[in-house]
View 1 (cartoon, rainbow, N blue to C red):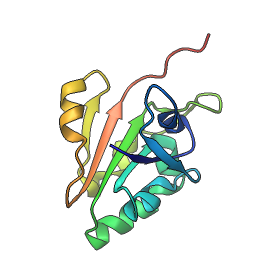
View 2: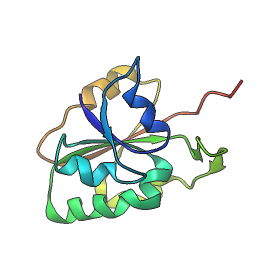
View 3: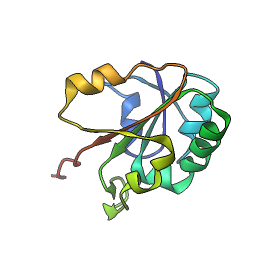
Length: 130
């Protein structure tokens, strides 16, 4: 699938071996941009809390379709691993589907855009830096 990615860890989706990210505009922007283009947003938990959640609330209120994939690692991975609150506490309105990053088959089955707003939270831990 082709995704609009956010600034942060999800930006890695634009380089091999992933190469599914086709555009990046700024932290928290993927939800709004994807709503008018690919209908698939890839964001991190911090980017969504920082400024993407407003667009997600708007899409929910308007009944617009989007697959929002949230990579939840509970930290700001690219700026020093500062802690991030549990994103699920803020997403009740969207009925998020929560998966562990190791659940490959389940995740693959859920990565299909449709005519509804769907939030997929993929939980995992960043690899340790070397």
